[in-house]
Length: 130
Image (tube, rainbow, N blue to C red; front, side):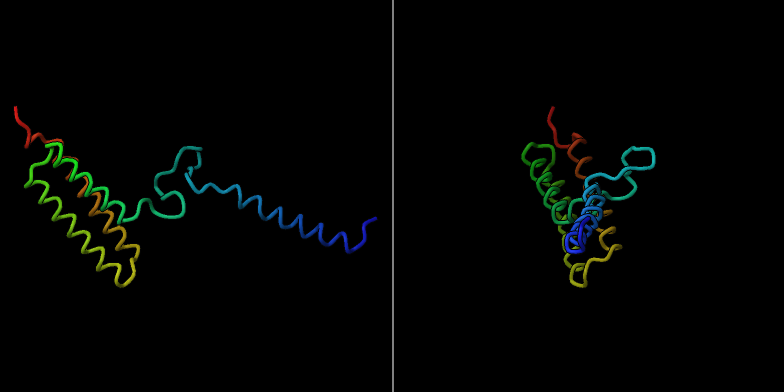
């Protein structure tokens, strides 16, 4: 029969293993609904998607690309970039006091609207010849 000195470390090891296995099974990449389908109502993972700075950089690149390829006129690009700069200034102001959930949602809404404007302006054929 095992003595106490051998039994206690074995119990500690078993308890640690039983606590570690459920934590290792968590999925941080994708959340699923009750029927096994991806659940899009809640953000997946630790955060809420790309950061505001990443989205601003992506939109800036899309405006530059539209200007280079002729999909955007200089006037359209200037107006879109001014709107982007406005959102960026607002983000700096929000971050001064700490970014709350409401402020993050406000920035996301503004960036979503601006992304839709960039997409529309690049596809509206206003600046094309022929």
